Length: 414
Image (cartoon, rainbow, N blue to C red):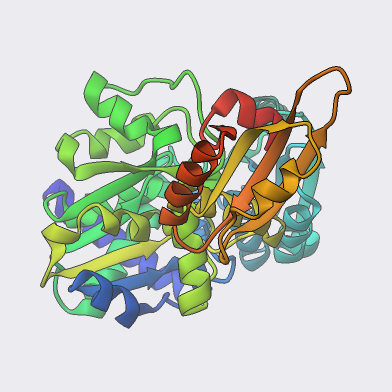
């Protein structure tokens, strides 16, 4: 039997076992995206699993395989602050095994509570470490000391096999292979799993610009550790591709891996929430966001986007909206040099258009200066409004410095 045939057979076996614990996720045609891109766009809704992410698949499959090999194995250990923790917790409760889940002490209480709800009395949550590396080290040490089975979030053959079931379900639900399947990439568990059963020919992988570990690995010919990672897309913010996952992904052509900007992902999150009522986490929106870059390539084609997760903390919504507006050019921050004379502020305000709104204003008047500095944030409904405003201000002698995209200044004042 060929490797592909073996992978498919094992994946179908995994699918059958999963049906005893949870239903398949729906494959839904999205009319809004189909009309926007003149294509037949479908969403594989992994955000609608019991734990709102595909991680439930890898966790349950890895536990099942471990118990097949060692029926007396009764304790599983993982380190996670997000979807993997919840998937492991769910699996522990369903399979009636004990789990110890290590989470950083900085983990939001909402995520801790959800993990405890999914696991019930079958799990123990241990909060340790300010940073994930410290949490991971503690979990692995505990696992060795207590002879537990460590569950990797992605770099494990059994986890990869579990994630491969997404591909099997897509194939069965569509009845044929679509023209393109778009997959988000973090550590590579989902993408390598789907690749193992469907091959690479019609796949496109997407990762955030600030955590492009697969792009780096393909360029290097082997896994590399990124020097810096942007953690905004937390479900895909992985500094190093897994060895097992890269073995299955190394045959991808570089043009089959795309990167997308974190701020643009925010605009996609807002769009899907406002237009479709679909709640996605940043990693869950990757496969949809990249459609903006490939719209000419997919016209008239059938495309499946895997929405990998929907565990969005709504406390992040103001930040997501802020980043989306800045990306779309609808919100900007300026340092305004304002003359210290009566009526100067009134003159400035009179130049704002009917759709321009002041979102932030901080002014420090210094008596020994002829000019004061104002930090001002302005929202508008059309990015072109800023072009008009800047021309009018400069014509009136006002000096403005746009600091919206100045990372150094923005980090401290925005």
